[in-house]
Image 1 (cartoon, rainbow, N blue to C red):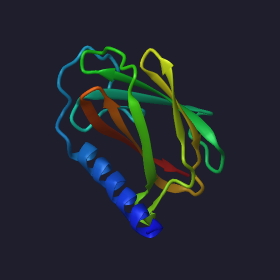
Image 2: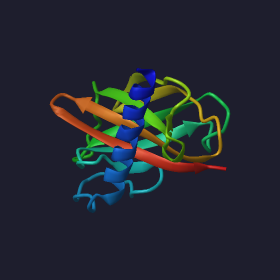
Image 3: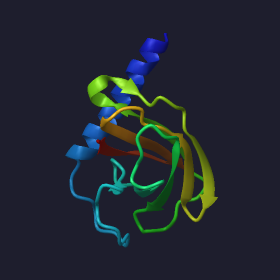
Image 4: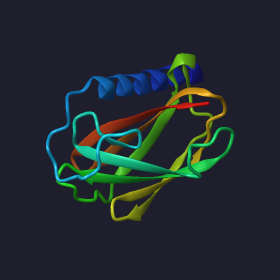
Length: 145
């Protein structure tokens, strides 16, 4: 059963990463940040998400945290969201080695604690965001040396 759950999780993460990579250009918005490695539109362009890692850059073999900032398409901070963390190494077909927790900080900011990347290579961290009736996902692919 655990193997099946892990396979479903990896498929979900891969699906989110592929959807985000193949999506069209973001619609115009008041959000000032350009699309980059740490700032992305969610798959359906419902949310704009930015993360900062502490420590930075993202470390290998160390528990650490990310602070994510979530804004809507009009650049308003999104408070009261339920944020689910998914992730893993698509090429290795496994998820994260830890179960990160999320705590709301206010002003559209959320603290993600307990992230750990245990080996070098290509990783994806994805967030499923539910705020009221709005639900969308965003993924952040990156490479650890």
